[in-house]
Length: 257
Image 1 (tube, one colour):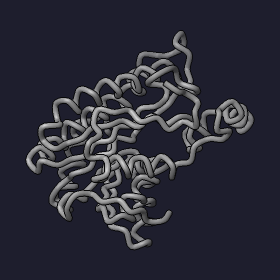
Image 2 (cartoon, one colour):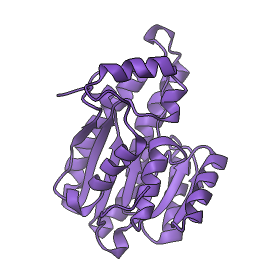
Image 3 (tube, one colour):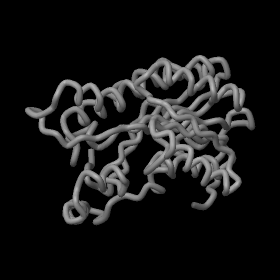
Image 4 (cartoon, helix red, strand yellow):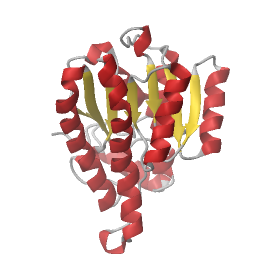
């Protein structure tokens, strides 16, 4: 993954937290930011996975720190932010990427599964955003990028109603937080990926089904994690300073609205 020409404020505004950073789009975002001079705290609920990814990136000479934790737990989220501040002295960029997907039909969704899917996707976005806001407000500079989905604007391709509902909720939360935060120099935006070639997608549908979906898109393939990371890199950079409250599609033309 090559370095891009992103600029992220001053030297003091280059500390990021990326949740769900041990695989897929989160890992790609973590590497892209780190390659562009950002100190990155990589969070994931899987302790061994996040430590492995951090070690791989450290071998490349990148400045990263692993912090395992559950984004649905306010205690874990507070620890995540406190460890970031202790290590780097600040936090200026938050990428709320952590998410889970289940393909269960409404009639079969147990209450516990609903709470789990909505909790990780939507509650986690809320808790992490709330935890970093005091630091960003004090510094008068911040970038928050929330991961929604085409599901948030329409219906999930492979996930259930709990996933669709959570991703729609993220769009509403993004708009509201953007309006509240603009006066502090903080931008808040959402990215809305379509079907991206990730571990989560590969564990949910077959190769045959993936190809069937790909053939139905105007751009006849699945998206790549680097393409999503490039979009996030732009949104947290100085080049996107006048963009807030937006939801940016990246779906190969699967949804055009």
